[in-house]
Length: 315
Image 1 (cartoon, rainbow, N blue to C red):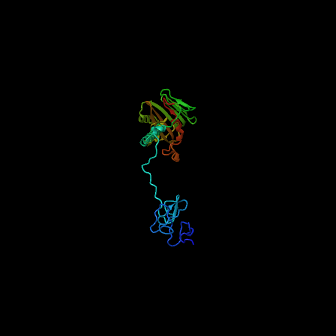
Image 2: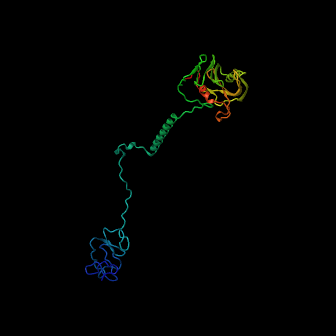
Image 3: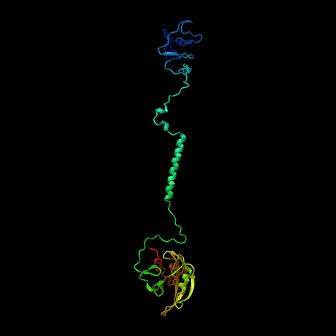
């Protein structure tokens, strides 16, 4: 009959290490202590049967045999059947001398690596900053006036050259033609009520030049002159900034005829100890928004002549 506690093992028999019965106990291996009161089969003190082949010993708690390949604990009751091998202490791995490794003595340490990285970063920042400063766009502050960046002028087909002061006035023809000239300037006329007078004088008295140009107008032709503005926005002659005034007057033709209200714009600018004055006359037109604020009709007609007045030394 099989053992109810070990159904997979054979029953006790002659020559077998197992016995059946309530007091049956596994026989310990030779050389192992025998539990108190247990001497195996037979009478007390009887010799123990040999252990099964491959058996390294028996559990001292339950008697289960274990092999040489078994773990440290009993597979049936969990009791420790083997002692744990002592852990080696004071053991170090062998190291290779630095002299055996090529260039090992030239490697940077942690601190050296940090200094090298910071130095490289500083060099890069300085190089980028220098490039940015070298390529920084320059700003030219021109305050109240900024003339265009122009190259060599394209000379007009018609022009007036003043030999005394050395300036040149390019004008459109038609509508303008030379109506008169003297040593200091020229009169460019489109018709009796549309003309411009450009004159020059030595010195830099801009206000005096404006006053002189206005006083030279015939009081018989220009009657009831009244100042409209003491400022001309953007006043300039040949891209040289200057000053200007605006007047209204009643123009009576010299040869007779009906009087006409006209606008007089007088500007002057100084450059190189010379002052140029431009006095333009045109009919008054208050019906068009484009002619405001002074009502100077055909104002764009005079832009070419005023802008293309070339000062001595300009090209």
